[in-house]
Image (cartoon, rainbow, N blue to C red; front, side):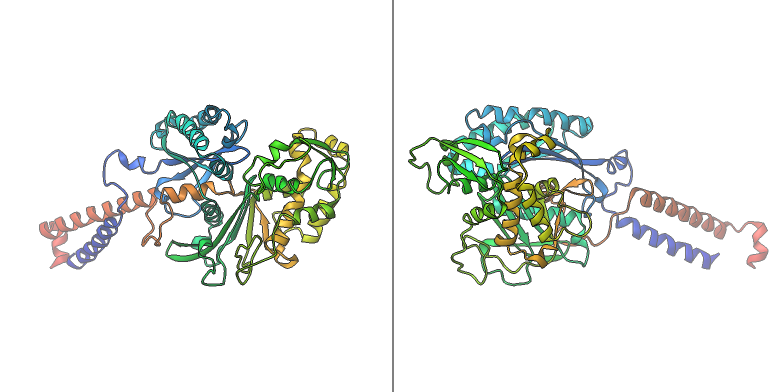
Length: 485
């Protein structure tokens, strides 16, 4: 009995030591079950052309695990992006009400007060701030008014920088792919919006020559020296404006389908910070665009908006911006994915070869407008008419702007979703603001609810055994006395 008591005492000691390492689990009380409820976060992506609201969910006991946060809802806000309400700023806030009500339906009512809500505005608001800072501030105030009136825990609405947008997109895709806790390295991120485009990756070259394009992260005990750059005015919508600003009067436009006609006001084109010359004194007030669907000529006109004449570094993309040699796999999302998916150039397996992508876009551009319109009657004319330009622009940007050769093109994967979550910057933004990715690797993995209960039952049984043996050792019942002598 004495020896057995030693063994049981040792087991009890180990059991108690294990229990003392569980910092996050209360010992008693009704709160114990609350720890394992799901938690929620809401992020609004206020882009240049529209706003999306995302609702994320994760189990509280796995808060610092990669890949456990998943998207449970996306709500597309009707109407313009918030920067489009510069002439009626109050409507910027009112436009969000429908999706905020949808979020209240998705997030259980008992979690409303603890659920953080963030709004990040991107390149559309960056441009509006450059054009008229006071109007941009009024737009944000209207947005804040609506978000503060919701039952959620409003954490702020602000214009994020292009560098932040690139970095958060990189964090999102690597978090969802589980790269931060693996040995396979990280993936680069390619993001394309309406007003800006971002490229972000970890290069082999160190140090990064241009410090303004360099970011340092320490995540899960690993250091990452990240290259990132955001090209304001080179999102697909603003790039089209840049291209059109190089043309004059009535013309055949190679980037629209044969038979397509569009009339644009000169004032709409030139009153924009992206057009360097400002509003020009022209003898006409409108542009009459008539498509002729010539891919090769379209690509030539697009090349004019990329300045590759000088590079103050060892290597550049365009406009004198440093770009280190491309390294590793890349995930291309947002408009990169939407445009290429429409053109049937996305695949879950091996990427579509560059030459096939080129021939596909070329063939699509040459199709008559009446034929394209008849095939896709449910797509808004503005979007449908611009797929030829957008597809050509994407190929030109990736191949000529960033240097994705035919070989390196195979490293690009066009991503709509990773699991249940959209690829984009919003998840990375929330993870950063809620400190859900630790700088250091957690020393011990917190126990799950089932493991905790199992350990408590085991320790209880050991304790009962110790008490029983102690009683037997001191009282020595008659039936055992002979065996003990």
